[in-house]
Length: 341
Image 1 (cartoon, rainbow, N blue to C red):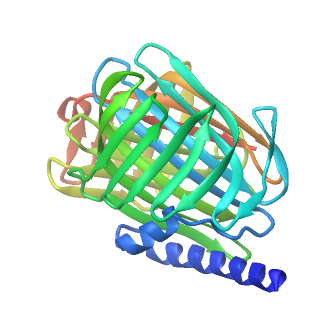
Image 2: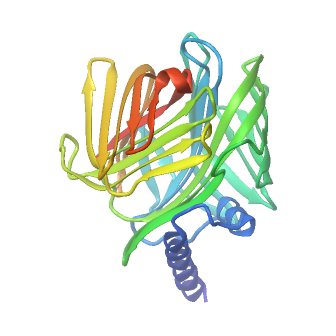
């Protein structure tokens, strides 16, 4: 019976990935968002499950930003930042996983540590801990609450975004990855100081060997944003697969999508330069890194993730009838991610 239930669970995981892949956009229901966010999937070999919570402040030359991570994978254990982490299921919707996080407080990066924690999924609630501090996310789209002991206490609410949620995925059986995103406003306390800005909640489930990629998302002062992604052929390769970029122009109430752009991404000193072209659309953005945090995952198809806290130093976007620069958008803040095996 246990074996049969596991097979059924794996089948449901594949069905979920296929469903998210079929949406590939913002037309995702609140019910499905909650189902993905507050559920433990049955993982086959090469299966992985992530919760990423990212927060960007609004003020300062180097704005406050922070990230929290919950990670589990198929198998009994792995090395995470050279620490052995064990994965065990402790009952329905209760499991042992990795929790990790960091905060850039405006002056320096503060590591919240890496913990082999028990995670419990309750009714619209995730409860765990990180370095002895209780961590909890609760609520339902679009309103959530998040806390980490006495360090972080946040109210997450609906913001003025052209798209405040999405569901996406790639399904090539027996491999596939699916995820949901929530984009919100956030207000509260971080490390004893008032914090106001934007939130990005993401849940990912995948069955795949890991592949090198770049990902980034930048929020500008006027509420506009740009995000981009590319899967690479290798760590140092300039050959990119599954490329995309999207600019949300809040000022003109317009979404500009680069469906399969020519992308060039390079690192020049402390800057990342991203150039994209798609038919009659082009963009160029220069991102200056001011905070760096690396996560090394080893075992069972895992990889290294380097997270860069960044601010845009240059931005230009052109279409046949639009030209947008950083001067019009105002200051920005975001994260650039460099992942490789």
